[in-house]
Length: 448
Image (cartoon, rainbow, N blue to C red; front, side, top):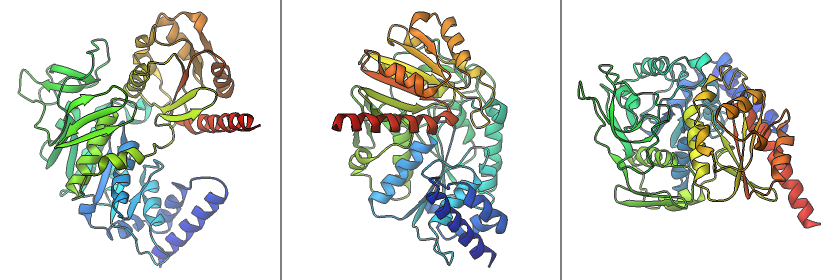
């Protein structure tokens, strides 16, 4: 009876949230867990564990998770998924309740769930996934997570609760590869040098996790991702099961994997990893991926994942939460040959991480000569302006704004062809609403 009551209350909250214009992605699950503490266990057990995949890691969780969802649903499968990115135990619980009927029967064949790294300890107490993807490990929200070792330790604790879970790991990240030691693993990665080597970029995992020696690299992709080996103990890049070769990043992304040619109009080199992880997971779950290009072509990114708006000029909104994320967003922007401006929006609210010292490690200098105007907004815009100054930018082309909306309006007036807006987490939805409003106003003006 507690299970049914929890489901009924949660569903009422979901309806109320929808009426109020909210996603209702976390609160309903949180209330349900208070009514019935093992509700997640009762619901998740209705799906075979071999059909459940957990997606973890610092960057790329949401896109990877939603790509898996798109592949599965394209073949008529019913899937439990926390699409909007509510990735703690409450959000995962809400996702299952959403797919359950009023009698507690889960109407789904598969589940794919993005899970916050530290929250895996709480989720895995009740849900036992057949597969767990780990995308990468970077320093993120230092005041919450601390160093990467703490995050990895929490995830190992979660894995100890579920001994049959198979790991799908980014073999190009030495931290992720080491994390899989002693477990059944499948690896994905990019099997060739693609990008110009940046010797100035901050590397998170330069030291061997086995013996502590400095790793040697044949080449880097970005941050610590690349082809590595330890000269002292022999720890090295693993044999890869799902490997991208013949990579082309001009005018989108194209590469070969296991005899298939993937070709999509996505921005950002890092999306190769997201696609590989989704391809690998669905293949291992028995899904035929012959038509994957059609699925990828129809995929619509979630909010702030290189999301496009048309407001007199193109505006690209992207969520970036840490040094590695910002560096890759900047790299994606630099692939755009159009005349461009850049606006960074940084907050230091609890979900963002109150410690924003990481902004000093971002490679803003790579934008020198490639960006016409540089803006800063959000609660910590003054810190950004100072960082630009130390980066050697012409300060006559730099401006800070208290108001995000005013910043966007001003930068829309320049003669650049495209505006990139990179935001931290708590700035995402507010900025998205501003852009939607401005886009609607622009369309209304065109129709008059």
